[in-house]
Length: 206
Image (cartoon, rainbow, N blue to C red; front, top):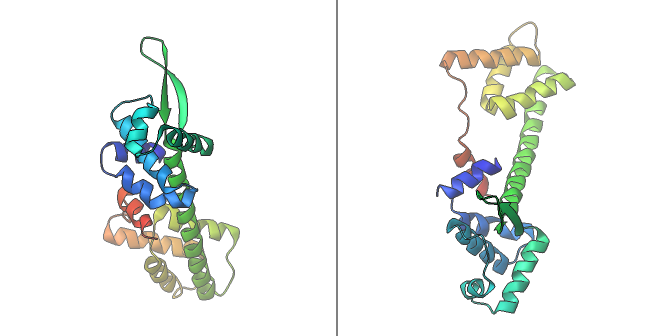
């Protein structure tokens, strides 16, 4: 996902500046550090691998000492990493990366989605247990989790399948699973997978 997010940024599909301003306050970053990250990203876009403190201080409208302190803070927190890379000629040169911020954003989104899924799974399990009048087994829980994480069924689909199974003599989570598959056969198409970009923007609305 990190590679995908970086690609979306590099291709201009996502605005790095918007991304930083949306999340920086969640990751122990000051506004000045957020602006510095945006400026550093601009350098990378211009294929500048070396940070010139004097030039960068003008960009930041700060004196050199304050700018150096700011950059040191980003390095201490892990958001700015200076490294050596090997050139095509076999020589080493200094460059930097700011990938840690993207990693933090991804971790935040994944945690948020996991929390959302946990709450949604609880809702589904509670409904099914009430409907079947029995607790779900660990295997049943795995099946329900798969509906949400992989199959991306909606609650309405699960509800419809459950009510359909209740009309039968034998009721079980496996029977509900089969009923859900039959729902898909009727429409002759699997449930649409959410597009990464659409889902990413949806998660911005907190």
